[in-house]
Image (tube, helix red, strand yellow):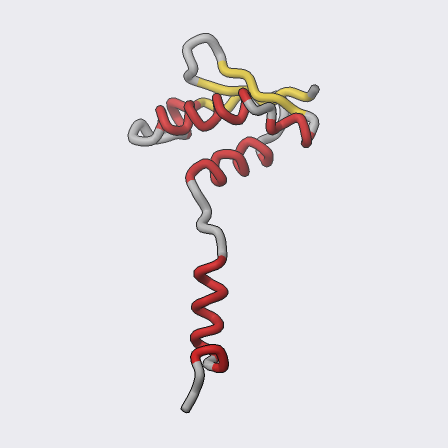
Length: 89
């Protein structure tokens, strides 16, 4: 009899279950970190209307918690929230 712990497929599935799912927020944060500094990122052109509000809220959270400080940058919106710019601290 094969025990579940010795089955390689079971171990692979268990490991996969433990892996963190990549969230929308993770993708947005990655984009902000990788974005070139002093470059305007036009949300109207680059973010679909279907997810734009979620994207904007995620960037607001990134700003609120000052996550960019660890990488030496911060993010600013323009006045109407249609674009963002990454700036060096």
